[in-house]
Image 1: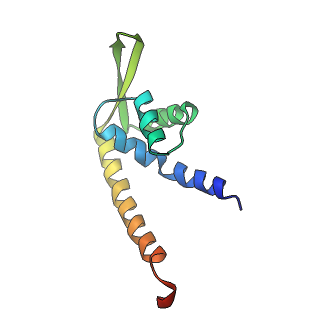
Image 2: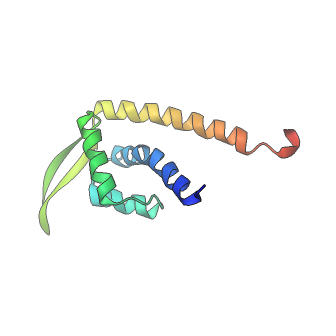
Image 3: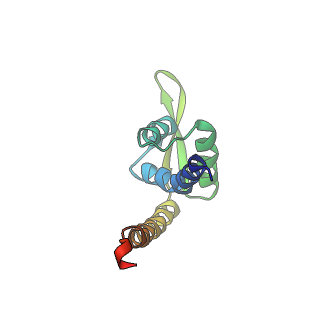
Length: 113
């Protein structure tokens, strides 16, 4: 097995959750999302982010508005919809359960097995 492939798949599995969390803080520009994800070592490229944002918008979980920019073309800023907030809350409950379950398994010493 290839460790790097497994690591990429793990990151992809939580990418949507992380993106929704970033947007939940307030209006955010896609480039700022990329910067934050990269700083957190969630290696993401534009070719991954934009289709995911489109899918989330089409699902009714987020919306965007165009804002004029002084330094170039207008920018698209994303926010969560009410459905998006509810969806994120559900994902957060699932995430907390997964963290708890995973900790129970990974923190158990060999002596107690």
